[in-house]
Amino acid sequence: MQTVYEAAGGLDGLRRLAAAWHVRVMADAVVAHAFGHGFRADHTERLAAYWAEALGGPAAYSSRYGDESSVVRLHSGNGAHEDMDRRAIRCFDQALADVGIPPTGRLGSALHRWFADRTTGAMARYPRSADDVPDGLPIPRWSWDGPPADADGAG
Image (tube, rainbow, N blue to C red):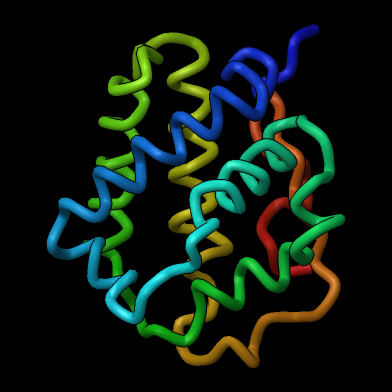
């Protein structure tokens, strides 16, 4: 069976989606605030590598950049931000349409569920401090059926 990663066009497809999402979030005054401190020049490439690994592709992110703990730490210690999360998810859904993935089709629905779960779950779990994130979390590998049983990022 084809993975979500393969159905999304592999790394090239996820690069296009990551680039479209980044354009959308930078145009949203609330979500863009998260990038107010700046961002790495290779942000889109790293984002696509993380998404690829999480969606059934090669383990390029964890072999080059870090594990789930490092990703979750980047998103932690910023207090609660439910409105920003909702808007980031909306930007993702718009980015799906921008790259030609119908948000209500099988692929778009799977990608939306994955992004929404990760955004409001593990990436929002430690609002007080990045120091609260446990070490050694693996990147959860999602399938068409959703997350693995331990995909909450809590270890």
